[in-house]
Length: 126
Image (cartoon, rainbow, N blue to C red; front, top):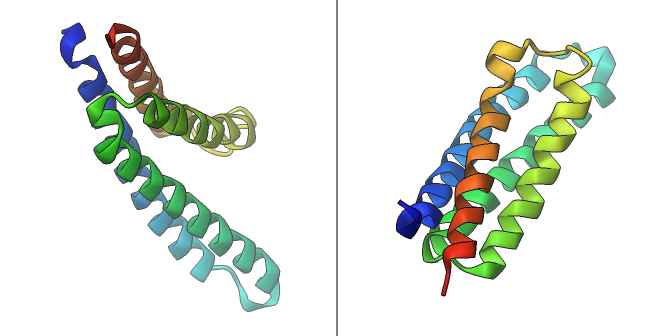
């Protein structure tokens, strides 16, 4: 199992990315539903969707091109970027109760599994 831990971690980072691309599309659709008199709110929500989508795509690309090969650089890139994104989500969305824990913990759970397996993989690297 340890021999393939980095690949399992890469799969979880890829799943995290796909999950967050779906979330970015949902956030974008939410921004379209904001009333016109709240234009700045809609614009900021669209910016959030844009940022989330690019972070997710970044995670997928790093997972495929670097984490799959057990790259130390890829390990640190996804560890830092995805961790910062999910910590922000935990602090700004989940802890205040803006989203219920039942669907809200899926992303952080996938993130923790990605970090766990990629860390095992990087420590097993010769």
